[in-house]
Image (cartoon, rainbow, N blue to C red; front, side, top):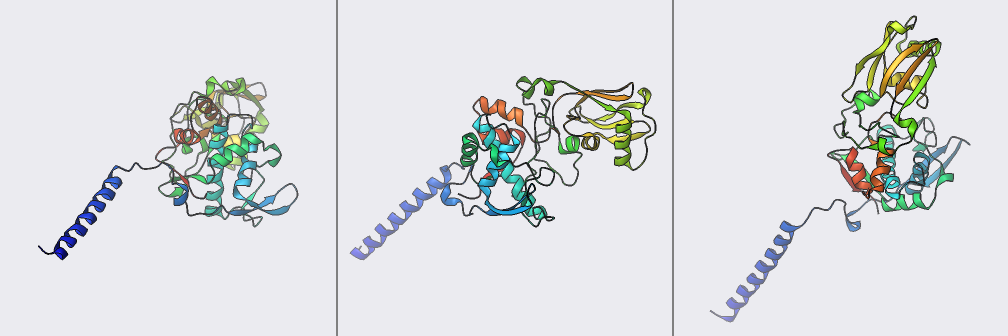
Length: 322
């Protein structure tokens, strides 16, 4: 064989060796939970924020805005990893609202400082814990099959997470990523009023609330016609019988006040004198992340991503900007 033939064989051997090396690396490569910085193509957005207290509209970087949300939604003295889990959900909520609803159209902005219109926001409470929590999860959001999830959370789920249909009576779209029935042990660490509470409402107030929800008067509400008419999979009251009417428990909670009727995780409901008396546990709708559960897991050393993944299933936590 001549020299030219030897040269061709040598070149082919080198090419084969290189291909083998790279194919071997690809085969053994482990899938990363988050893209590395050089794989992240997005840029942190600047959003418009309506300041409800003053009527001002301002431009603000997303991560700065998320600091104000986390500071308002969770105790800033809690473990950083719990605050960081809250940051991931706050970022996801914000982007989903902007994508699906155009933010807050009534103000012509992406977000507002009103919890009724958007989500809570209080920059005066921002501290080093909050800054660290937001920075360590910078750009991280939660998706299910490529779409932002409904990033729900509540203060205390009473020990067991509810489905969106049970806890919120939410049936607008399917939410298969909610891990309904998950038990987080939050009652071991939460405050006494979340472990067991009693609330009393004047019969006249309840009657008016039912009429507003149903559009018709339920009639007299007495000891003989008040009960839980239907419970959900976790034992929460989904439907209440009040007078001659059935009413959704989640809707009644909104009408009576979320801070007064602390949850629909009711142990009992009765009429005592001129009042409707409810007893229950938990605080909030119980769907998605439980904040007290997040605090417990953070104290046990779980990462923000692990905390979020405890409450949501088949999700992807993605870093979408550096």
